[in-house]
Image 1 (cartoon, rainbow, N blue to C red):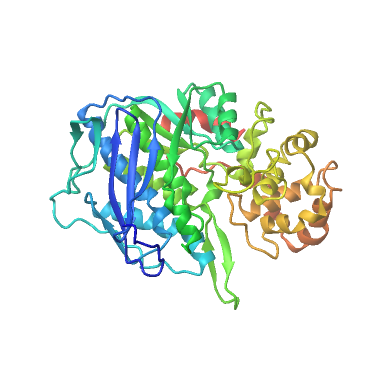
Image 2 (image 1 turned 180 degrees about the horizontal axis):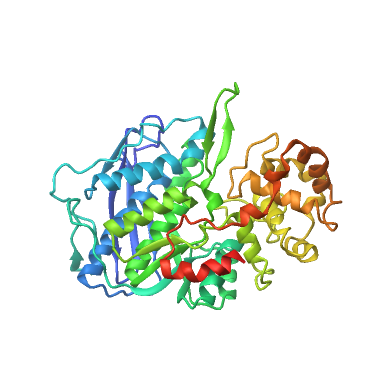
Length: 480
């Protein structure tokens, strides 16, 4: 194996070698390889071991672990995007293969666009043709106790009798804090959950005063070597991976809800016009935060893992502006939250404060909050007035989709940014600021006044997976 050298263009196959979980230590191992190259081992560590799983729970954990193995493989597959995909350790059915192909194709949409690649028709997961299972992938409670592989032909998943409790993903930004406070107000038992070692997220989670769960994830170190050796690199569907990790954790811990905070705006991507101007395509940076992923993944968990495991976004009925309006109702987190993505890069320099003030996320969150948060409070949160800085013109133009496309970031729709800017242009405390005045004088006259109203964007949508009884209680809260 020492003679093997990563050569992106020579690699023929990507392999899902095996996966396993040791309930005694809480460590899951996800193993991959290219061709006959070295094993790439990723680990996911659940605090709280040892875990005692009954037979049904252990079988469901095996199914959830395999789904995690398959989705997390996107981080490695993208390094070479070989034509062949192999699953060495277990079989999958046609529904699982279809889900994975959708996740990889759409979740790697920005990656493909930026690298000038076409993935259409390339990503094919092998569907089991026989019912005989492969050995070697299991959840182990003790060294000599294991649950066998779940065959592709098994009947639909059954309820496990999971405890009513929510694992709520926190990312350190405004959205998850709105969800946490809404669930708290409705009396829903919850554990604030995050993946990785971000100190900013840990501090924000601690400030909620709720139980916390910090799941460890360690990527295979060779991936960074491959990047230096010419691997394809770029954005992956991180939320899909984190969703699979949290679904696996929920089964092992024995709770019935995995809750994210993705608003309806996440379903809309950037409209890219071809160089000759004859065609337009959509590339969604945050596809795995959108409704298409949420609905497909949530349904798959209930049909293939556990019928009583609920996966949903609490904020799906809301626009980004509606979320900002909810966040503005409390200043509890003003000194603790950050939506600046530069804080969360795997590699690279971090901003010296919680907000860099120049990235698309800083721009959008400032603009989205401005109609609902007093100006002095908002400037205090971010550290300066981003809307009175002419040097930021290009960044805000992209948000407005004015002479540019929406940034490849988790930001709201162009119509939301335009409506927010139009609202500020009517406010005495904002309208003299450089970028607000420019919008009013240069951009707004080119637009229809009816399209700049903020009120229609605050109306709740009914496309969501929130448990019905909870949604009935939340509807009035979110409408106000």
